[in-house]
Image (cartoon, rainbow, N blue to C red; front, top):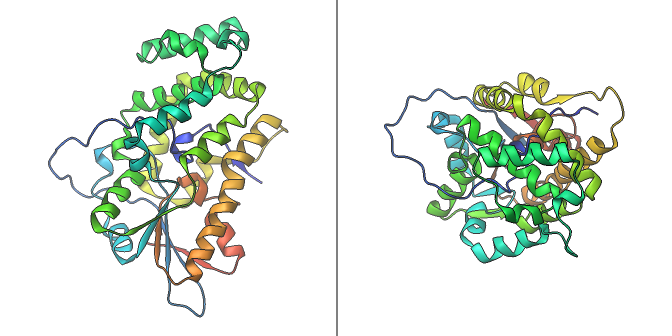
Length: 307
């Protein structure tokens, strides 16, 4: 099975994207983006499920979304998301409680687990972005890794307030549509906390290695997202493994494969109730072998790209 080429949390994870900021007021631009939308149906029923891959941070150029996306949302009774990001960001006490789980126990610090060069490189990246403080010394490597991913986003100018999931959550709350949470914030935190220290250090080291090219990678990915070409997106994101890497195996299994399977089961069950759902979860969960679209096809659903 093809695996994710990059550690791209922007397409598969809601957490650790900054919850601050509002969309700047601007003139309504011309509609130019054509992001990927899939329609899921099944013989014997007129019900529809829409799969619209989310990108968790974007910019104003993504909007307004094309009519085929807006129409699919309007036709739906509910939206399905990874979790309610708006509610999560408004609950500061819950955020702080979850973040404390990433603090070392028994007086350990980050330097106990990192080689000197890795530590110095990580500190330098965070300092340049204004994200380093001495408190970081008490956080496990996975916290450092996710912050460095956020720095990569800052370099491209992409912001959480323009993210697709937040956009549709805002609309759904205004329109009083049902919001189906396929996961929870705590579940996503626990995924990261489930990585042992060796795995966390590996992910941090990989993020540092990829850091210099991360801006170009993110920009290319964002351009492809706006184009919405399924074949180009899959070719860019996924590749066959040339050699076995147990760390990447675990990363793909825990962050992608298992979650895809769980979300596909939930969407299948909801479809059978007759509720028409507009699902917007990270794009990396929807496309590719073993993605939600593929898994639903295996269950007998028909999936087509909406033009």
